[in-house]
Length: 215
Image 1 (tube, rainbow, N blue to C red):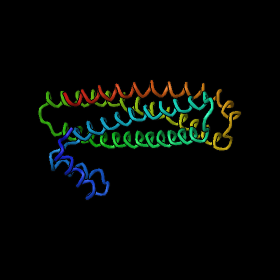
Image 2: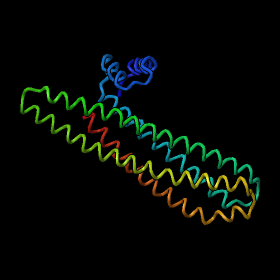
Image 3: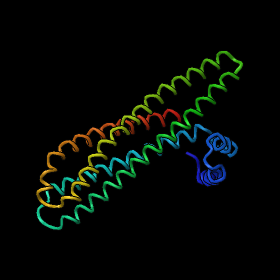
């Protein structure tokens, strides 16, 4: 993780470079921020976005459960809470996807650069050691990114179910409609459970990869 002054410089570069990845990485190199540093930073961001998404999905499930068990009071108020939870979950899911894409982008740049630099090493022994390290890092990265995409894929059915239930309630905001959703809740709970499990696995893999890069 780079320090605050470097982060400020990085932000200035982002504005100036208008999103061009190769130019961005080149500018970062000039201020002492290497692709390895950016890689660590983006994996951390992806991990934190998954942790945040977990909490939003859990809250959405809790509010939906509260509505199913609703016993008197203002149904519309509870519906509004559920709608807000759905929107928050959707935004959290979009952040997860965006940050995974950023990890993918820098990983490709890092591994390409690494391979090019290995070819410039004249010592056969050092070249073999660096090549071995690259292959191990790529292997660990493959495990990481697969776990991220697996968790990401589990968000879609949960969001779809939350949206369906939210729209159904909007059109049928009464006790009978709430009762009709009880069966749906079993499926949602199962899907959220699978999502949380896979996200925890991805978060664990993220931390292992971060530790490897920083050591």
